[in-house]
Image 1 (cartoon, rainbow, N blue to C red):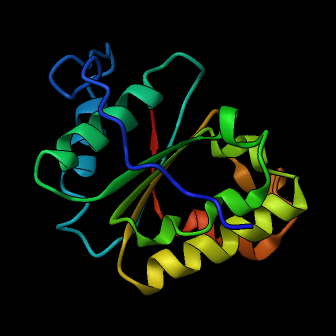
Image 2 (cartoon, rainbow, N blue to C red):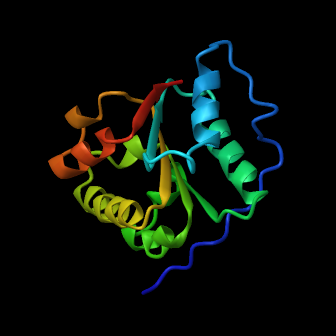
Length: 159
């Protein structure tokens, strides 16, 4: 059964302009996200505590790039993990894929494999991906080592 991924639905409440953080280093995160299409690196991995603004950054990225007609998709794993992994079919066709709370799929073999293949397609097609996670050291929690290595290849930021 094929799933239909809906086009990113604009969340006007969350933009880079109204993102606030007490950590001045977060400006580097915002700048890197804004310039992701100028860099050769296809992945950004942002980790931090819950309620630290990671989701806000992903929404902001989708809003920012949607304005310049770059096709984006936002995947909140808190909601998506309830579905079959086949929901990822077609996601690789977007220019920017924002995956919120990717750590929720760590240790779940079928999801790890699906994301491993998805990320390979994204990288092979020079698309971009931004992940958020509540944990930094992903390799301890990931069963599929090829997936753990793949996640580590991106630029990492502490939020």
